[in-house]
Length: 406
Image 1: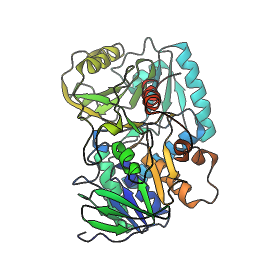
Image 2: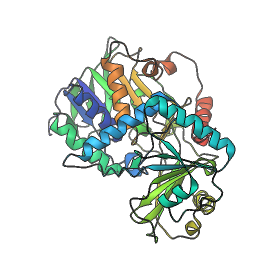
Image 3: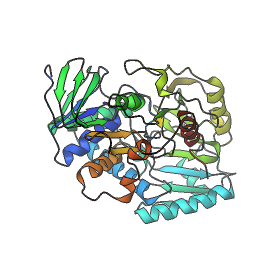
């Protein structure tokens, strides 16, 4: 695509969220869409750093249904030529205390309200599903058969292929430099490859969502927070069909990846950035491996999986997923600048939630009467209230740090 075509909708950002939005819009009949990605290919930045787990058990029916929609999208894409590498292996949610077991019972009620199939299984059954894990100290295990994992970059390429087939334009190596606003309404963008007219700009720019919003004079507390995981070299007994797992007390999650153990976790004292500290043309500071944190993950998990102790690591995944002060996505059109639409602040659900986020975006734009839940995600909650960056950063970091809080 040498010349950029004028389009009704321009999407800023070619990660899983931007592509998921393009896919949902095209499925809803909106195919006059142009997605712009600054990198040389889609899914190269935050998406490429993802661990690839998709869990549907959440604390509210709305959020569960959102995740269920993402799974439905992955299943559909898995039947196409270019697959997201979706593996529906199920997941084990493991409680080590009575307090956590009680929380699992509440989660199961929310799952029932949303129509998600989950079951409590006993420790021998859990052991049958993950033979090399020790369940002796475990108080409860919640099993979700339709959870799974995918390969993040395969998800991006699967979306890209499906979008192109539906007529969506995708231009890589194309950076947005300016958003043109006339009489309070978006009318186009200027890029490193020339100007394009449009009626809407959808901001799905991840760790640059703050900067894209600043181009129209809006500020949103989209806070990059460091996240890390590691993958060991192949280990005996780790088969690809083993389920994903989450151990909230240890703030850990994991799965099998390439015959090794992928183990990630949420840090009780997080490292986060002020997005004002780097420019639109720049990038967040590169993440250095924090061996103290990664060794802590290994130490904690070896209680349940003794083989984790001392296992050689083949890869460390790390990046800056973005978080918001209230832990909710920012989705919808701004009341301040007509045609400027947010699809950001994904709180580490960008890849796994991409199908559902696309659905929410479509509802916010095309439904005359969006649900109360969609309204609660509006960007107006930050432009029409007072907040401070210092407080917003602390609150966004706390969302990360208490990710598995009861």
